[in-house]
Each structure stands twice: as C-alpha cells, then as structure tokens.
Image (cartoon, rainbow, N blue to C red; front, side, top):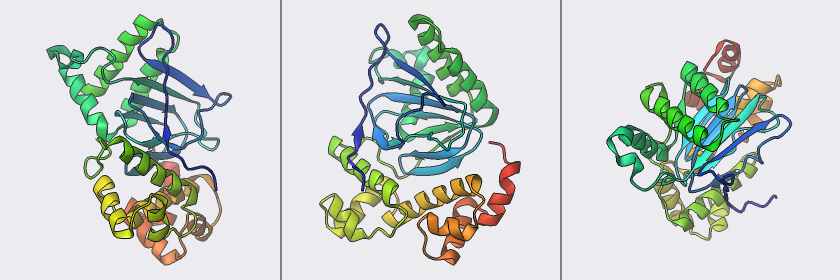
Length: 290
C-alpha cells in the first residue's frame, strides 16, 4: 500500500507577489490527486474535461470543467489526472489576510469578505458563470503582479455577484478543526481514496488512527456529518459515475470495480445518490451540460 500520510501543502508565492498563480496543462500536470489542506484560500478552474470533485465531506462528479472556491484549511483532493481530459487547470492561492487583517471588513469589500467566509465550506460555480469567470482567471496569466492582484479582486467580485453557485458543505463538516484533527481526517480520507475498492472494516480504519470503534464512529460523524459507511459508499458512487462516463465496460463490472460486492445494492444506492439508475445516468451523459 502507498504512503497515506496526510499532506500539509506548502505554498510559496512568486517573489514580489502576495498570491500564488499557476497554470497546468497536458504537458505540465498538477501533482497526484491526494487529500491535502493548506491555510491559503484557493480558486481552482478546470477548463473542460471530466473528473471527481472532493471537498470536505462533499463528493461529486463534474463534466465540462469546474470552478471552485475553497476556504482555508478545508481538506480537498486534486481535481485532475491523466484521465480528466481537460485543456488546462489554473489555481490561485492566497492567505486570508494577504491584504491585511481588516481589508475585507471595509464597506466596499464586505460582500467579498462574506464570500470568503462562505468558502470555508467550499463553493462550486455552474454553467455560463463558471466559464465566464474561468476565462477571467485565465486572462491573468501574463499580467504583472499589481494588475494580477486587481484582476483577482475583479474575479472575487464576479463570484460574489452571481447566484449561480452551490455551497458544498452547508451542513455537517467541521472545517475549523484543530491541527491534529486535520492530520487525522486527511489520513482517513487518503486511506479511503487508496483502499475503497475493497471492504474496509470499522476495526481496520479505527486502528489506523488509534481509536476505539465507538470513539471513531462518534468522531467521524461529528467532523463530516456522515457515518463512515455512508462516506465510503459516496466515494465509491462518485468513482462509479466517473467510470460510467469514461469506460464502455458493463455496469456490473463498474459496480465491482467501484468497491461494491452486491449489484442490487449498488443500483439502489446509485439511484438514491444521483436520482437515476446507472444505466439511465450513462444514457443521459451525452446530453448533459453543466
């Protein structure tokens, strides 16, 4: 098994800048999609492609790219890999107080301050808004530091003005956990990511974080708002949705490849999770635009 140590990502802005801006492409890909966290607020724009979206205890499958605003220390997973098929991925990262501790409290910036506070739960933008703001983000690439900063404030302003978004962890996920909780929950998440294809007992996962089974169950539900079984099954269902889009193999094979051992149970959970049976979900994929 691979190393599952949680990752506290160290982010170093370019000299002369208070924010970090980076573009990845097919020739220069982002790092492996492991669970990680960092004190910086993060904007991620994936231009085209399909993939998994895992932020806090939220899990979903995106199509036609993605635009996300992720708050400080909110654990999340990488959004692209060799199978994503995106044109590019752009990220902007900055500390919450990168413009001073009270900058977003002034009247002109108060609404953006509220947006950044909501980002502690994770925000995803949709449809034309996603693509329009994404194009603004990409246009910052070659600007000098001052113009890039002004451009970032305009991006945040556009995010604040729209209603075309969803807050991902509106209920249940404790995002301002202690440092040791961040380590523990990221270890759990990384373990699930690597081992979801096989049965994972409560005894095994509890022992990984040196807890009793009852203590682990209480802890996990408190942090995520979900039971461990529910969380693992949702991870498997998102993986299954990804496979339904990317592979032409049978739905039965996808069921087992996603970690389920009972096809009837998989069908039932998938319909509860997505509102559609796996076969209907696959048939409608070519008509869906998000």
